[in-house]
Length: 245
Image (cartoon, rainbow, N blue to C red; front, side, top):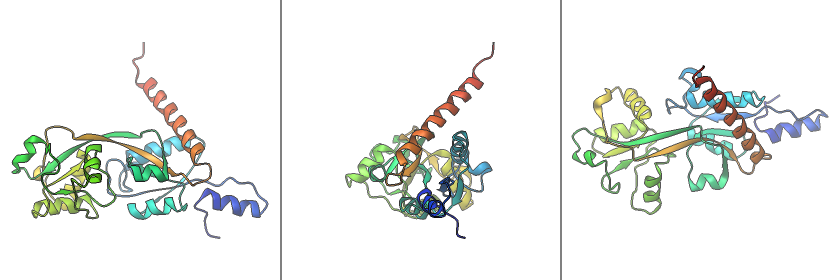
């Protein structure tokens, strides 16, 4: 018998068979986003570990699939999965999904060839130069605004590693990413950590979230339960770290 991926599908099958509706949740994430999500990382990365711990605190034991980002996102939107993570807010996504409370806050920086003199100014005018931003990725808020205004038209390859290659081949000038993600992209290409240089200060921070399709039955309630469990875990962790007298 094929497995049920969505809660709604499982409930229909269970009710038709005269049983109770107790379907397990199904989640999906993607690779290549260290230290947050990658099935080659310990526990799938720190975002994966945090999401699964939160669901366990809710009394849930969800199944987790690893798929290419675009496919996992579209299948979640279509109801094949109950939720996906980690995603940053964009107007398009917020129209289709409920967002959890932040899982992490991730500062982003400009990275370019060490010889690029503009790096010292942190590319304050982000419309100067050729930005590489992988397909499906969202930049920091200022980057998103400039893209929406048409003042910035990024190249959109499939991966950040491809952005690194484009910069080194002089097909792009810079990328914007969290340091850990940029370091992983350099390693994937087989380059040393100093192959690209980092701007002097953050160009903004992105928050990472679990997202649930708005059209999923019980979506708002699921996000509310998740946020409550996440807050309880955070409170417990703060208590554990507090000085003991």
